[in-house]
Length: 171
Image 1 (tube, rainbow, N blue to C red):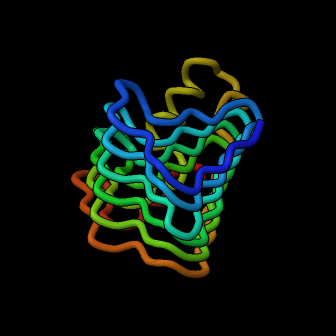
Image 2: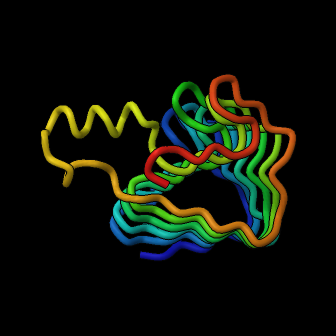
């Protein structure tokens, strides 16, 4: 399934604002995902997000975006801002478990979390626990990737890892 959002808002939801799952995709070129209780957008199981033009993900009580389970995001415009996440998440964008994020334009700003702006990879203790609990390296999370050719990451606050960008164990 594919959804295109060019206006309007998704807000004041008790859970995250949007869940994109099982190969589905969302193009957010306008409008906003904001003020949701546990975060803005979560991608999982090979899903895709394109954030462009005037699309915005902001002021969520939780991570702005989580890209998980071999999913991908491309950001050519828009903004991820004023999100607040708890440990161990970034307030802006989290890229993990075989997922990828390409940032060509737009801005990631004024987010707060363990990492403020962008976290790439899983925390080392999560990888250690995955191996310890299974005894099998096949259970260790897959490599996460981040490519930045444009845009800006600024004015984010990390209270444990980094303010702007944190690259962890499996990135």
